[in-house]
Every structure is written in structure tokens, then in C-alpha cells.
Figure (cartoon, rainbow, N blue to C red):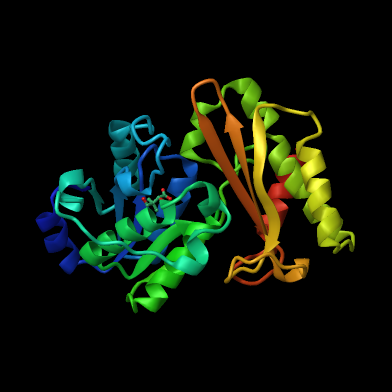
Length: 299
Ligand code: PAF
């Protein structure tokens, strides 16, 4: 496995590769590994990047304290047999005279964008830079960050980027919570308190499967299940049924994706947890995604 730090070297390497690309900020977990394994299956070569992107952190967020586990990450990637890992230097990505903004105005200020001003602009920027450098055939992103995925698909479509953007299934922990590098911030009592989140999501699935399609009732039920144990430790940032392309709330639950975010407050920091469940079953959103969540909750 090649470890590449410089822009010139990654440009030279990527010219010769037909590749799948998995961008990360490190602190790799099984969710990342599932994206990398999908890329390894579908491409001759796979390149992974590790870069804690400063422009996507809003003021007051955890940029400085974001978990840094480069050595362990490199060990994991070596075992997976990826072709190369790109670990760029911040001053090469964002030189002091850097002066470009990018965004998708109709999608970036909704859902998580309401409480993370500028976040999605930073994500667009770094992914555009990395796509320009690597020119991959396929880009792999997790469907947990559904808004991020939707925005990047739209950016690539509108800018005629010749890369297929592939959304990969959510990788869930045993209690049903999606894996995330920031889960490490929660102590065991908060971790067990927030396991109400996947339980409340699975209650929506069960109600819809039993024929209830009243979006107002379903949302209220979700909220009351999460707040059942009146907790000062977290608040619901949003929870609604959305159109998959416009991210606008819709009433037709069968055509929607339900997306929700919780802000969990620990002594030192606030941790955002996001999750979603699609209700229009297709080859892109197979029934198995719902079943995996239901199974976690039952066991
Ligand atoms: O999802 C993430 O980890 C980041 O937003 C990404 C896509 C690596 C861009 O920095």
C-alpha cells in the first residue's frame, strides 16, 4: 500500500489508475470499512483519503479535538489491501491565498445545515478538490449522512463531474445506532440513553408496516418515544419525512425518507447523532435496510 502525502505524487499516481475512492477524516470504524470493501469489490484499485477538513467545521465544533488515529488507520488499510492512502497536508490543500466557495444553496441550509452554518460548503469544497486530484471512476459515501450524499450527488451532476457517486448502506452497531467516529465521545450511560433513537425509528417502520401512514401521528410518536425518559442530555434537532431529492418535508410517507438528528450534550462537548430510514423500497434502498434496523432492536 502506497502512503502519499504530496499533491504532485497523488496526481501522478491517479493518472494511471482506474479507481474507486473513499474519502474519510480518519478514526476508521466498521462503517468506513464497509465502504472500502464495496469499492474493493467493484474496482480494480481503491484509494482512501484521510484528511480532517477544517472548512467543514462550524465555529465551536470539534475540529481541534476530532479523533486522530492515523497509525491505527494505516494498519487497517494495509490489511484491507487498498492501493493507496492519500494523507494530504492542510497547507497544500488550502494555501494561504485560497479563495473559492462552492455550495448547493437549495439543499445546504436545511436539516443539519440549520445548525451547522457553512458545513456543507466545506464538504463540497474538499470533495471537489479531491475529485479533481484523483479523478476516480466511483466515489463511495455512506447513506447515514444522507444530506451530504444528496448534496454531493447534485454537485457532481451540475458540474458534469465524470465520477459515479455511490451511496452505501448504513452500518449499524448491535443496538441499532449507526456507527460514527463521534460515538467515542459518549460515556456508557449516555450511549445507552441514546439507544432510544434507533428504537424510535424502528417504531415508525413498524407503524407504517401496520398500515399507519399519518405523518403527523408518526412524528409525534417518534418524539414522545425519544423524550420518554425526559432527558436533559439531548435535544431533537429535526425529525421529519423528506423528499429524497429536494429534502423538503412531504406528507406521503411511502415516498419519503425519514431523517432525524439528536444533539447529545456531554460535559465537554455536544455530539450530533444522525440517522434515516427510506420508505420507498428500490434496488438503491432495499428492504434489507429496514430489516437490519428491526433485527438490531429485537435482539
Ligand atoms: O463524511 C465525512 O467523513 C466527511 O464529510 C468527508 C466526506 C470525508 C469530507 O471531509
